[in-house]
Length: 189
Image (cartoon, rainbow, N blue to C red; front, side):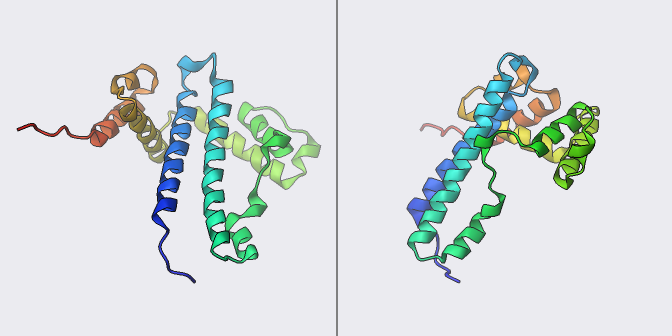
């Protein structure tokens, strides 16, 4: 195993791309809010695919470096988890439609339920639909959303906008995150 550190230019490029991906993720969350009824379908898909593409660039950048430095092709493929690659160009697959059916409380055909992946995704959708009936109280999910919204509010210098569209508990936590991220102004002598 090679114990050399990541080269600084590569590290910085990765940090830049990950930051860009996080911004896209924040926008996905933003476009799920009720005031975005007219654009949510288009914009959540744009930003989710932008985030996925950006993170794919991160993986390919690291992979290209590993390949350049002589990593074995089988090892590289193993690290890239190529078996998990989903191709969006084919559009939603049967298991995706099963997941949506579960979310929307629709029945799934006997034939579709025979496939284990469809059955698993359908039941996952049903559980998520049940959870959606209760107040959103998963601390990790709330904290993640608040961090993303708070970070974007600081970057855009618009912390007051948090109150306009977020659920109150997320807005309050996002304000705290934004306050913690605020760069203190230096005193002038």
